[in-house]
Amino acid sequence: SQKIEQNSEALNIQEGKTATLTCNYTNYSPAYLQWYRQDPGRGPVFLLLIRENEKEKRKERLKVTFDTTLKQSLFHITASQPADSATYLCALPLYGNNRLAFGKGNQVVVIP
Amino acid sequence: EAGVAQSPRYKIIEKRQSVAFWCNPISGHATLYWYQQILGQGPKLLIQFQNNGVVDDSQLPKDRFSAERLKGVDSTLKIQPAKLEDSAVYLCASSSGTGAYNEQFFGPGTRLTVL
Image 1 (cartoon, helix red, strand yellow):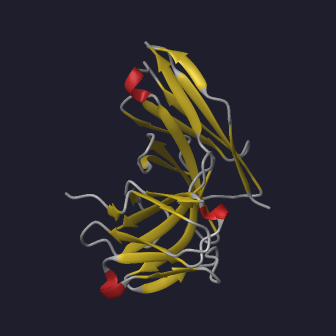
Image 2 (cartoon, chains in turn brown, blue):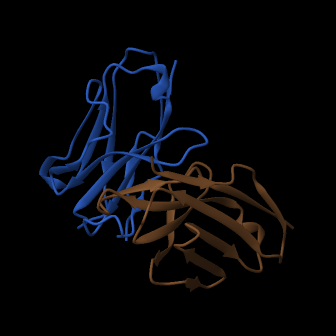
């Protein structure tokens, strides 16, 4: 069956460092992958979409890579700030691109 | 631009009771989604509407859950009767397009506790 895996352990990182999160998937061949941010008590907020033919995508201090051979996406936050503390979710399409399946999310805590 | 509105924000009920959630999507967004997010998990799609028609309800427990989207705008999600395992946050989202690649805008969610 199709699976999306994100690290369940929170990532604690010092302010100014680069945070790197991993999203692995199995039994998938997604045409794209999305990343969302979720703060406590709030709904997810869309950050980035990367397509299978794009190796890398950037938005301000965020960088996403997509390796279809490894079936993995990496999400980087450079020069991390305490305001970046949140849970980050990856999401992939299922069944002909009509339904998004979300990973469990990975919490990031940026320590001042 | 106003975001996706949901109410109530919190609801506590006893098992076997009924509950309803309301969602007002972003104006002009044709596609509306209801997700269930259990603590520590990612959102799971329950139902997707395109205007007032159902596109995907394959993961909706139809023996107890129902949803409607009247006039292709507001939507309500109902649970009747509720079970303990229905305790979760119910998120409504909307998007301007029909494909899952379209950015989805989420509301704040309704946190349901079933006792």
